[in-house]
Length: 69
Image (cartoon, rainbow, N blue to C red; front, side):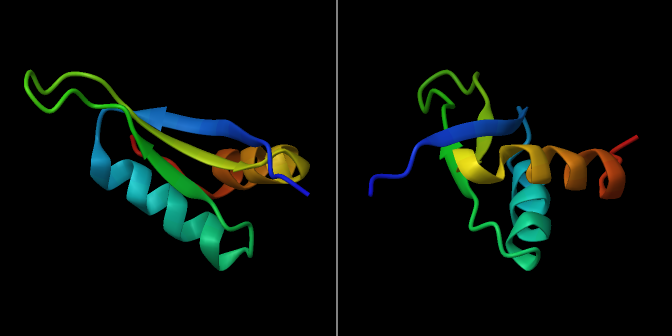
């Protein structure tokens, strides 16, 4: 069966996206980072996506465990 990936986090910082990916990985959600940054002009964002079956769980983990402020 084909996975349907859904965005659970986006940021312009690769470091923040990697932190979110790592935390979700430790929870067994198998996230991926999609690099949507333009290589020529350096604008855009990074998205962290998970399988659609795990979206609510991933959002809950992000809200509970991650604070970049």
